[in-house]
View 1: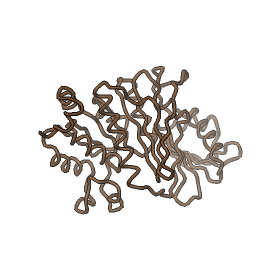
View 2 (view 1 turned 90 degrees about the vertical axis):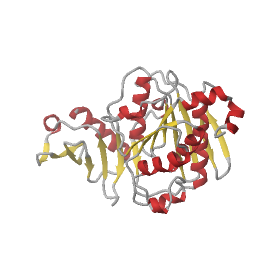
View 3 (view 1 turned 30 degrees about the vertical axis):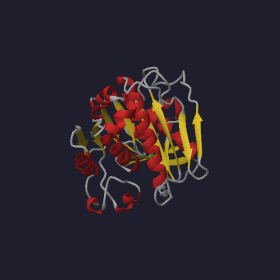
Length: 315
């Protein structure tokens, strides 16, 4: 009886197939909370990954939580609420930040990207490409959003976002709860199609609620894509505008060889685990954890050009 309305549309055999599947959801904010809710009700087993806690500002759009959940782990809280919704499914949760050390946690039949940063998305793309796992990229901000099915053998995330540098700014952008609900619904709908081997959307879907536009954008596989050719990317970093807006900082997930940097550029000052370098007339602070601080330079393209050079020398 639980799935009778759904079975009348997809059939009992397909419902049994769904109940045998497991989907990993990375990020349990507005998209992840709603997608996990819909999937649990549909009878699909879940893996939940998020290291964040519930905040009062989340309740405007993250419909799986309530005021009693403020300050609690999103992953653990989501699991408890979802078990009350459907006690028949298996739910595994991890209160962890996804990284290259624990990326195996996402092994499943399908992965949903409900994160809010490109670094994690490229990590997902690398892993899913290597293990031939389909995943669905989703994003929403202000009153617009998008989804794209990343299917093994077809165009991947790196084919779309050829420039792997992520720009993060301190200013928080607003968001409507209607756009997150719509995008997560589209994401879950595509997930069900993929799991049931039905025809799924091959285009990137872009929605804008300001003018109610719904666009489909054709994405072609990039013949020069390193991920599609089997080469896992290892130089992912993000450009971040500091809160004071006084400096630009670039971060990477790899340590730097300080000796190589000194030999190549020559240092103005050596503080052991940090160097002050002068590159093309710009003063740059570099530490061995892969952080690069530009004291005066504001040209983001030039910042990334110099950062690329530093990472290449110091790798």
